[in-house]
Image (cartoon, rainbow, N blue to C red; front, side, top):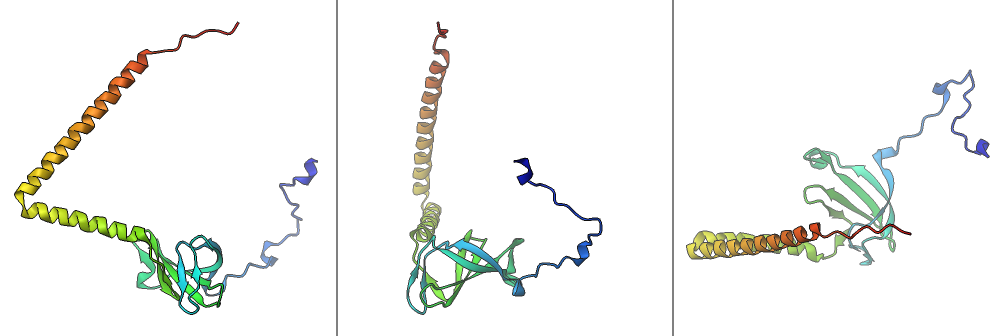
Length: 177
């Protein structure tokens, strides 16, 4: 049985590794990749939807030029084909936002979490502006923040007290007969 699991291969004494043919480098630096779509897309030609999580055979290439790197992180371009009309669709990695951006061939569908981030940022900026303009509002916010911190400290003290009570409690050991 052990002879089936060969870990070493026989290399004859007259073997010349330079005579072994080299593997070909992919033309145009396109690397075939089996991937799942990271977001939903609508094809610009046939208006069919390609949903997030759908598996595709895609081609990956590094982006060249000025936009090729962001803070030393290489950006990549992916080429896929629409499953209905075979139109090429391309999108890029976006390391700045930890996301992807559509380049051509389709449109990215609406995603709620993008708007949620923007809304939260806008709300925080408005609150800061309001505090700068109104001194009483800033004072009220500081009082509310200190009350919230005091409530958190009380809850933490209560949890520590409960843990201290449970540390002293031990189940007596009873050996089996």
